[in-house]
Image (cartoon, rainbow, N blue to C red; front, side, top):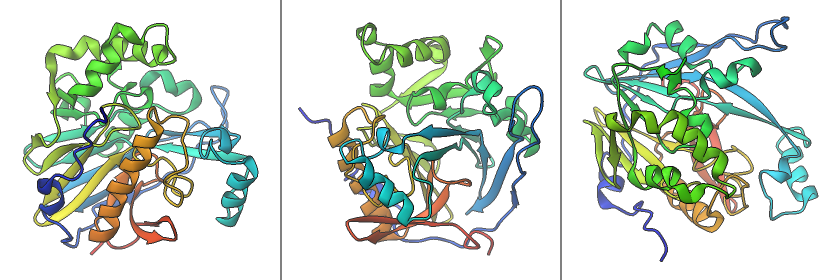
Length: 329
């Protein structure tokens, strides 16, 4: 039986629909990559972008970037390689490589400090990722300031920063993620399957914190002004988060779309990392149809840093419009 994706829930579509208060820019800082060092070429220093949505303060951290060779082996896997290359070239992008960015985000509501996803953590630092803690420090936050860690799903680039030196990285936090997602990845049935590697990562990084988790169902509230919506396909229990404050609204779409051209302009193209490819495509259309129709901004984990923008309908898909000064005024 197809899983109910929950995106049609009236509570999600109607709460604050179409109303965007003018957010005020707190700070927008981008630091260039450090010079090559003996420890690692192109080692990255933390990049952060801060803005205000209603009464909530957002800090987006660039945890790092990765280069994917042969783009058609990740995006548009059901298309000819030449078709994918032509689409990249048409959009002024290299045809042989894709740069993937990772953007965990802190939402400071005043009462709570909610960290959404955690990047690679220590395992990524040799390659220049794992910059979340350094980015939070740059923004003036200590790991002990985090009160809630909310995970859109449990892939390694979202959970790697949960543990640090064998201990919880955010010692004062409680944790939330989808119930379906947690149950899937902790199930021993993943052993001996292509999902075994990620199962092991979940058992190492997430399972030790189980007693501090609250498991979410579709529509559940995380904190006042922030709710979870089931958006499956990329993973069985993938969730997106609807955030509202003072009539301003933003949707954190996680990995619903992972490339601003190949996933958005061609939402039906298959993506290697989507576990249920047909369901992922249907979810993309439902989510981004809503965002386009209601002109709601979104934060996509893999969108070009600082990962925030809008979409409009374009041909058979969507055109990504990155934020500029909308959040300054």
